[in-house]
Image: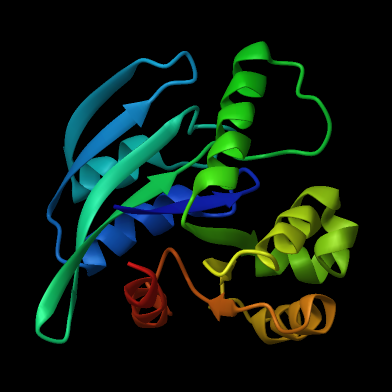
Length: 202
């Protein structure tokens, strides 16, 4: 089954995207499979409002393991199944928290294996810093990796912001022909385009 990994820095909107995208595809309840860095697994069921409240938030590193949802993707006359995997936010340098280092290492290992990489960035931060590279090496390196993978797309989140157009222009100048999909994880903008992109991969 195709695995779409959502990856990026902390608080760029990865978890909100995953929950709202699952709802966009027709789910009213989520069965989330947690794959912990120590190799153990567990699962938990949520309704959509509970998932938004408990899984996403403004605190740094609320997601501390891989969190997967199996989804049906309707299209044409058929349905295709895939796994959408949320991940621990990545940071530059070596994090002082050992548990978070292990969670980030888990995310990086999954990044090498995933069939589909949905790399999320915050357009507001792109405008503030002037691009991926000024933001830090991390996002630029993920984008460079994406250039060698057929299943890579950069999700430019917060496309509802007034400065989003400028942020998109900066990204296009910086990463050239790589696929960029403007989205709003909160307001579900651009989800149809993400669905069409994922459909071609699964």
